[in-house]
Image 1 (cartoon, one colour):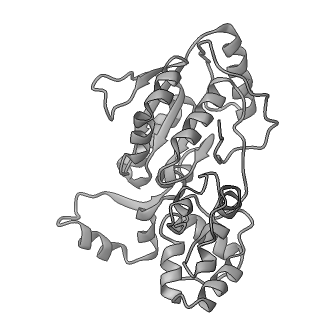
Image 2 (cartoon, helix red, strand yellow):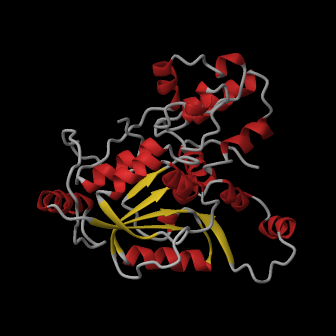
Amino acid sequence: MRRGDVTLMREEHLPEHHPHVHVHACITHSEPFHEKLAKLRAMHRRGKKLTVGVYGLTGCAGCQLTILFAKDKLFRFLTMVDVMALPFIKEQNYTGNFDIIILEGLVANKEDKERAEELRRRCGILVCIGACAVHGCVPAMKNFMNNPEVERAVYAKVDYLNSLAATPVSKHVPVDLELPGCPPDENQIYAVLTDLVLGRPPRVTHNPVCVECVHREVDCLLMQGKPCLGPITTGGCDAICTAAGHECMGCRGPAPDANLTAFINLLERQGQKRENIERRLKTYAALAMDEAEKAQDVQVNF
């Protein structure tokens, strides 16, 4: 099974094997991640199930739908864990603590912040999935615009919003794993969750999307004059968009070694307008891109 990119501490990857028993772990959120994995491995050998909750903050719920629509993988996963809460489709949900909570969506208001803090307290391992939870996604663009104007353009009444700056979950609570993408591929999600159940760290990739284009023998869209962000975007998506002929939009965030200055200059030489480049760079990962720009002293502003 292909493993997608996740953000976590580097650890040695354990040998692959197929899960056949149930798992349960009693872990606390304050433990170091490698100690949490060690407990999961130990509990795996004892044959008990993990307790899992799936929740969402502000967002489109697309990541939760990705989990639910992957029927074969979902059914297999349910033999390994007890999904005790999934408010998106369940009316009655467990209100206690969990071994793992899977969380999508960003913090966009006070209620989101309070919910994220509550869920962090209630789980041993917090896994954030999707561009919203990891990077703030499209809503984070408003952080670089006139906020009152944006809100008035979207909502008829703004007094009740209690809005905050649109930010990823990690800006508010400690996060154990982050799986970016809009949405992440179902294979990536279930590969990561299976690794957790077995107590082994998911594999990390720092390669850009271009590496996966080469592996899939996809013709380079950038060389065709299209504003593809593949060279500066973290891979792990199996180049799904570029393989379909659509340029990468950067939904997995900037790659660690992305040379933004050289890339922007390349797009400008190809005739792309600076304003369009700037907006594309900050569509899905505005905050992460802004941090990368500042680190490289790149002047890119709306």
